[in-house]
Every structure is written in structure tokens, then in C-alpha cells.
Image (cartoon, rainbow, N blue to C red; front, side):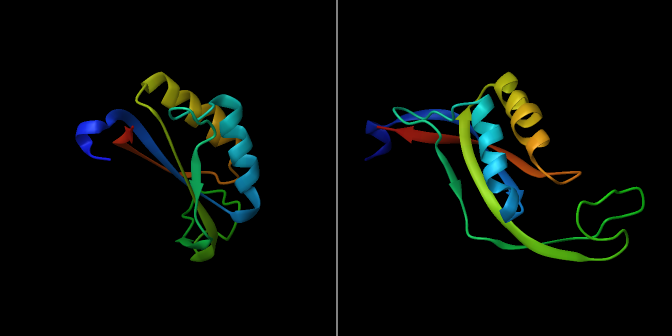
Length: 119
């Protein structure tokens, strides 16, 4: 497929890192808020094999894992999905789909503007 034969759908690509034991709850929470539809498919998302994340909680933090002042390392899964570029939809997915279903005080959420080529 070439760019000339594809429709370029403007999307937000959302990436979230989450502990392995919380992945399914996060996915369920996101899909309860948005169907993650791309073309003729819904619930379109990607998960990567667990990796290692590192952080150090600073004074004032209330970490779910680790202790204030100590470097903590733990398994994490990368979850990615796309939604059409709609700021209200993005805010709803983050506020209702991700934050309440993520165990961390400050979830690692990254949003990139991208395009998804549709045939």
C-alpha cells in the first residue's frame, strides 16, 4: 500500500506503562470509555513484553511501590493505542479510562500526534 492509496487518519497515539498485574484492569477501563475503533476493527491496541522501569520517589510522593528516596526498579508493560484526534475524547480516555484503573500515583502516559494509514 502506498501513501497515494491510503487515507491518513490523524490520531493521538497514547502510550502507557503499567505493572503486568494491572494490565487487564487498565485495558478494561480504557475499553469501557472508548471502543478504540480504527476502520472496521475495535479494541485495537498493542502490549509489549514486560521490561524494567526505574524511578525514585521524592519527598511528598506516596509511592505504590518502593520507598521515598530509594531507587526502585520493577516490571512494566507498554500499552499503546490510537484514537482519532479529538481533545475531548483524549481527556475522557485519560481521566476516566486510564487514571482510575492505574495503580501508580503518577501514571506514565505519553501522547503523540500521529497518522494511521487506512486502506
